[in-house]
Image (cartoon, rainbow, N blue to C red):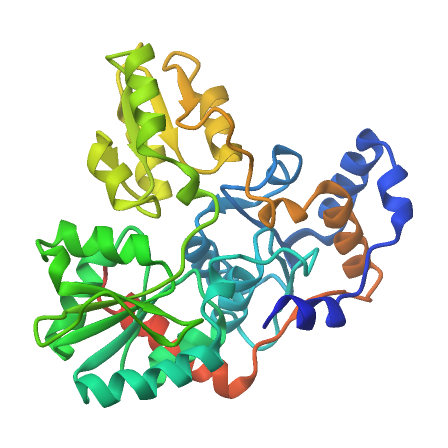
Length: 367
């Protein structure tokens, strides 16, 4: 679903909510949560603002929260504090009687928007003409339900940043080649981690509907030309500057960063890996972290004995994730309590069925 589609469906929050003092909003949120009790479940993504995450029943990455939502059979309403593709995944995995709500439909994901189903269908025909039936489509969970459904329908699966290497290994037991959507950096970094040469990877440009660079019989991974607008802003120059200021600093980055950044960092891994790395680090160790700023700031507060800073001092939080703010959350909660829930995320049944195939293939790998 593109931005225009989202905005056309959105039930907008009254502007008056922006004039309510934070103290009152916080109390109203607490009151609604208490009154709704077990019928309400609020999952909150790690990248959310503190003003929102304080009300989360669970915090985590996108797939973990979707799975937790699915396990919670009591909640009639799941108010998902994340972005659109995450709420879609929660809707796919939850039961029919449960309603998934996104407080602000403008909370999209620029990476997910870089893989449009129409572009993929067009590309698939071109790729089949070149390579025949030797390609398995695989998609990062940071993608639309329609992209997940395409992968499910064509025998593929979803991956997360924590299991991408295991899932790619599985994919190569199914087909000779993999089309990796929508994040080229996670795909490239995972391939290199598995020992694949860069020469075996090529880029597909969905805008031009053509390859960028060479391809041939030795091509193993076709990388969709997409990226995370936050993680792509971390650079090798950032690493050099951090090391000049502090030669003993530990550089820890997310695999959505470029290959050059990942190669020069000390450690690279998923959001959960980043958190666990800090948990296990010795007191006094110093860290420059290449991931979203809200999480970095939260880690600073959580580990005052382990100085934490952003790898890029000029980095800003994920703008689309931050569409979910305290006024929108309170408005959404009060609409639920009033029996008039807004911004319900409902995935088409056929799309949901095929998307669940892709998710289940990943979950069944137990990785």
